[in-house]
Amino acid sequence: MIIIKELQDIASAIRVTSCLLLPLIMNEDEDNLLAENTSDVLPLLSGMIQMYNRNDQRLYGFSFIELVDGLSKLMVRGRSHTFIDQNLVDLLLNLLENSAKNNDLLECVSNAILNASFDEKVQRFLDSDRAIRIITCAQNNSRSQLVQKNCEAILWTLNRIPHRHCSTISNSCQLQGHIMISYNRSVIAMCLKIRDRLKALHYSVWLDVDNINGGVLESMAQAVEDSSIVLICMNEQYKQSYYCRLG
Image (cartoon, rainbow, N blue to C red; front, side, top):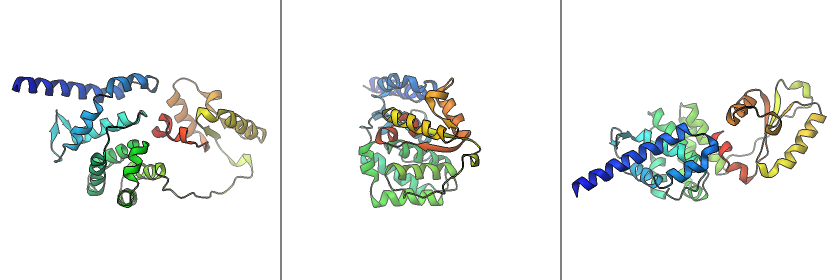
């Protein structure tokens, strides 16, 4: 029985290792293949994270940060996170609240919470006064810009960010770069009309159907870099999309 248990542990370690490596070597076009090959490992990975109780503890040779980072990378792929329960969310929130001196851990944990927060069930776990207080406190007090960005994005997914009014632009010559339009395929017809209207007003417009060259992510990243304005045509499908989460 001991030998069988050891073999099971070795097999689990190999499965987890493979699971953590796949997001690093597969691109977004292989998303479905990744989901098929990692779905049964995710509950194991989640369980390992919940077993964590010391900063120096290693499970199957992995540190806690490595496990959470791996889970975070897998969660961004857009599947329903049925393996995430209230206990795991509470563990991550407790770490976000009590790890102020460990930026690496805070960045990893806040990113995991962000990627999980797109799931409706996880949103219910996070939509409490305590969770919002912890996330807001981390956003306001962390020295890490990544933690601040992640926490702001979490609050955005929970619809806890107030709308802000920005100054208007009356002349297209005021813009140094183009206007980038980001959207979900379900509203492409409307976006094409917006593009044509802006071009008629002599604005330079970037839309993926006109400008994608080479890799999708590389082209979009360059478009953001060169833009003066990013116009996001927001709907629920866009909010849940893979590319929106990466942003």
